[in-house]
Image (cartoon, rainbow, N blue to C red):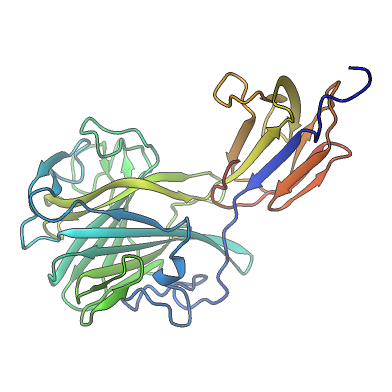
Length: 374
């Protein structure tokens, strides 16, 4: 090409690593500032649901309209494919309106813990509540076309409330072999572990509370919340990457685990994960099907890989590649020289140190939930 380069502004290497904000004050569970025991959604001296309004990490599930168009589950918790019925929810059972989830990672005293915050709102003003929050690792639907196929290790958080006082919280994991909380053999939900000491919650038992997420006022006994330290509960081990991508809530007819399921709010996308994600994005100007070669730390890739930027990220060779895991230490990604092309820009978001002279980016590993891709 007569010595000139084929690139006006040069290819660009982009590394993205997800990070979470760290609250400054700890008021409730050790390491968390979330106010899970006040039964409202407004922050006092810590954080509360109002703090999360506008955040992409706040996930909201909304039930179908109340009445004959509403749907409910039939069967019991261990049913691999629960039935789905249409029609209004019985007046003596919790008729759900919404549920909320929020996940954050907190670094407290050099130890990182993952906290999950849950909230529910219902139409009824009953003195009892029996809610189950289910979180799935898979996104594949079951035969009913609504609920998600379960994988061993999926998480069920039980929320039971009777009259005054605080709710009782428990944790069960899906198992292929048992033992089962309801007896029998697997696949089933395993023995429920009490969460006393690693979780806490509350219900607005006596007063109405304002909900800043929906912009409505919730009468007494229609809102509940909880905070769970997933690390202390053993859900997130220190040496393994675990991700729950779908979640939903359902109500039961009584506090017995084997009681019939009632109302539910269909699964939504959530992001409850202890994994870090590093994403490499190749941007060539102009777009080209030229293959660009990269090498990376063993934690990311055992062999070199290639990217192009031909304008089609869905073909055999895309312009982006992501790596997910529990990263510690320093990770290196290097682009190899390509004849006829000049590397003129390297950009790194969050924690990396780009060096365009050697076409390499060093990223300090973070044990953080998943970041975005570009």
